[in-house]
Image (cartoon, rainbow, N blue to C red):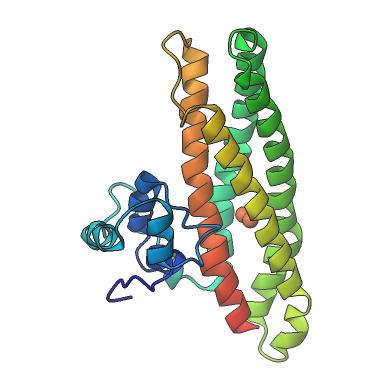
Length: 233
Ligand SMILES: [Fe+2]
Ligand SMILES: [Fe+2]
């Protein structure tokens, strides 16, 4: 994408230059599940002038310290490998830690701050859903995508049922996104109160990171991988 216009979709804008996700994160614009919205629509929904947002995006093309991975240039199998080794591996390591911390902080401080009890409930449901979801991708969906890329003939036969499966994954991404919005709300945008102990602070820091990482992950599936799969089928 050479020029960003008000009609460009926010998903395509990040797809062309992943570093721009930082701008959308900072402005609270959803570029993953909401990736099909135009920039003008997404900016106005957050009370920003689209021209100002375009100027910010145009200035942000380099991602400091995040390597050179550019999912848009990857083939299907390479992209599945990237998502598994970067995003799924992160979740496998981080979700048990956050599970422990949400349980502990709710048990210790839930009387004083009852919203922590709901943080625990929302996280537990998110954890169960997202763990089952990534397992389904790795066991059932990504193997078909790899076979689709390797197939030399009759790609349509390999891809049978894939469109419906991707639609289902997108629905599950929406559900995970809604849980993250709820967590952000319940935690005052991940801001611990003055009296919070270290575990409490570490939990909010971890949840904020989880949100940013999930946005990248869902963006790379909804707006990069899935359109490439449908184009190849
Ligand atoms: Fe995934
Ligand atoms: Fe997914």
